[in-house]
Amino acid sequence: QPFPGPGLAVRVVGEIREDKLETLRKATAIAEGKLAEVKPSQYFAVIMDNEEVTAHTRRTHIQEGTARFLNVPSRHVHVKVFMDKATGVKGGARRYGEVMGLRVQTVDGKVHQPPIRSLMALQTKLLTDNPSFTRVWYAVRYVPADKPYVIGMRAVQTEDFLEARVSQVPWNILNEAAEEILRQCGNVSEVYYDVTPKPPATIEME
Image (cartoon, rainbow, N blue to C red):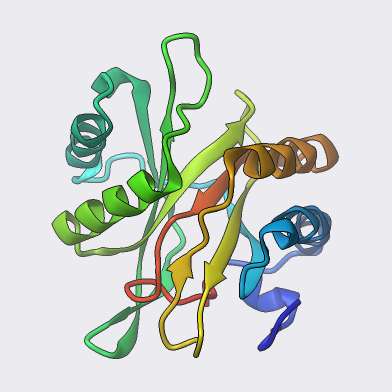
């Protein structure tokens, strides 16, 4: 993994547990193997507990804003606000902010997969309108089951690590990685792609 290459612990959001680390090891091997094909500056997987804020005051606003931006019915947009927070950058300083997970489905129940550049524009609008958040994850694959963890894949292009652009990874690569993660990690319910640049997010989650 390219510089700076921190240990796995920095890619575990929330409490570190043995089974959580083992799941991340499996997901990391899969994600890095697939994402390497597009030669990002840095690329990896992170793991979070699948626990959400069920009555978040901005959920409906985020749902409706996403639906308008992507021109889909709002009932097809699923918004998850995770309990755990992640680092971001605002005004040149690091701060913790909320993480939103978006899943948009087509009429036949598949995950809607617009161009990554469209999702990057969407996250700019969502984070501008919802300043308590520092990161937007977009679902690649999921299983309709209650499982303890979710995985986020991250790939960025950067020259100096002070700023970073989201890599426009082709959907076929994201799909292959996500499907393999779900196959090998039986305690993971969703796999996301992080579509947030630095800033407002940091490259790592911690």
